[in-house]
Image 1 (spheres, rainbow, N blue to C red):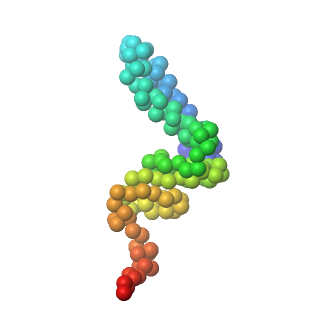
Image 2: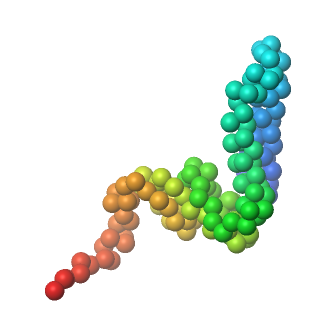
Image 3: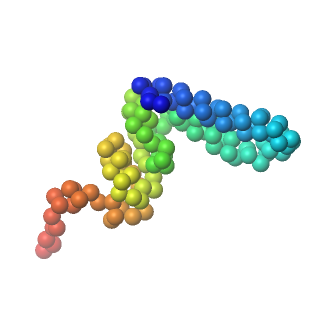
Length: 136
């Protein structure tokens, strides 16, 4: 499915998350005959994580908290999210980028990133431009 707007992308993504949350909370316990509170208690951390992620993707949580920057795992970043963040005046930064392909993708989105292995992610074009400095 192709999305024409960032709103459409997030709308369907949020619907998928809500369906998954409903399955985890209601349908799965009924189907398996498991006590709802027991399953809910075991999955409370996962449910809280899902709700926080949903709040971040809707920019409800960042806007409420008044943040200037989102530090997200690189797998959660796409062009739609970056465009929406820019429209709200929020900077996006990726963390733990350790492969060159992902680094180049984030560079194309103009998203800065953190890495455990920065020496392996140098862009060949940039490294050719840099010349060593002679120390006196």
